[in-house]
Image (cartoon, rainbow over all chains, first blue to last red; front, top):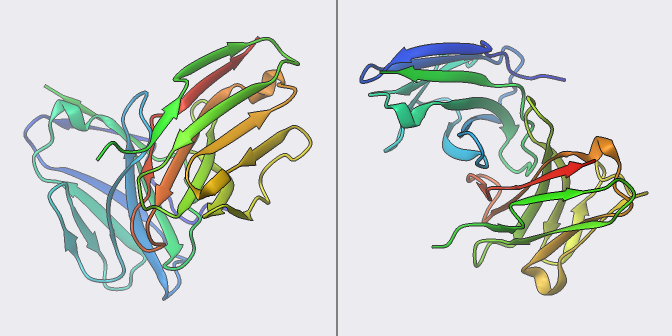
Length: 110
Length: 113
């Protein structure tokens, strides 16, 4: 059963911020939000994760709404190399299993 | 850090033949996973190892799939005999702790003809 809902695709202009939405309306209090991306012909790559506070690292920022029912991954300055499928995943902290959905295919255009 | 290394990168075999995939996880990562990714879909977990013990193999089709992780480091996933529907990318990943992110290898693309 899908725990997250993401748009199937979106385009973004190079150099602009890319905002990737994810709905997870049934998220439990002990479930984290994880984001991975998969560039063509490569394995998925971990981006960021968070519980309820906003998080930022060198790759992206994660904004989680106060009710935790949705989140947004922000790529601050998208480049052509950010073209990939982006997966939003929710899971309990001590649960090893990652359940991938279909993700969002992001195409960054020059 | 070398990352998770998988081989071969590509494999084409005829149906009913055996095939094996190899994975070398990141040094020190006790947890190792095998995932299968069908075309256009997200990866699906096949098996998880903690050191040399398979702690979750509920999604592994045990009639034809087998896996081992001798000495708790490298792992091998085998299919015997392969079927046309086994064509997919087989991904290996490792992690240090459950809360952190996984590191995936580049995968082995299997084509069964």
